Length: 131
Image (cartoon, rainbow, N blue to C red; front, side):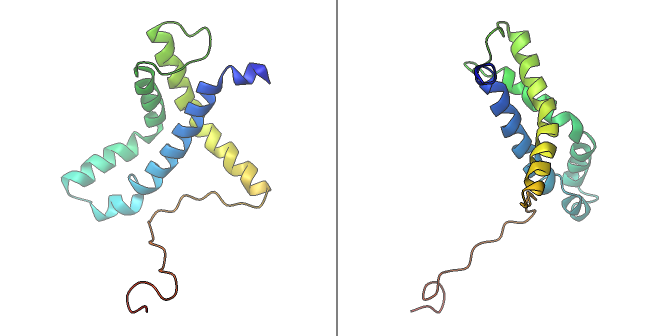
């Protein structure tokens, strides 16, 4: 267990990049949004973003490696090692979400990321027309 605890920065970066990546994939780079913006400059940008989606976790991890003061596991001493360390966390994030989703499914939970944000309804007696 102590061996795993020494690598908490890698595990946390992997899990955070996994969740952020899934949210970005289902909201920002969704095929529905791509269809709605087809033919515009934004549509072109989203198309390129959608086509390069597999690279995003690695690039995000590499960018994270350049952040000063970001904690790393023992033995990661140089900037190049730190960048590669977090690039590996980004790469592992794609598998991490798939594993999390599989484990949750076995336990009876659904980990689908909603594509639209829905405001909760107001409690009874509050909101428009309430007392």
